[in-house]
Image (cartoon, rainbow, N blue to C red; front, side, top):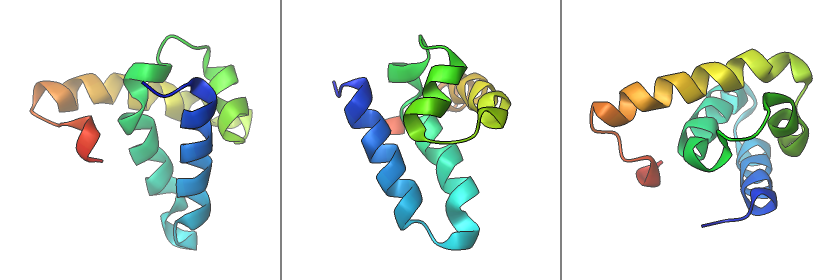
Length: 80
């Protein structure tokens, strides 16, 4: 399992490499990918760790709720 700092670094890298119009979608995918490792943390800490504005707290919370339904439907987050 990756450390929180390694996860944050991976998410920041993915966001920086995403096309300008794809950054928001990439953020969603990354939050889904790492939801299990980050869900125990306060949303504010996750935003700080990724380097995004605190206004994205709601997005973080939504992705963590959605991921459970996606996994129940067969999504393997390791393939993201």
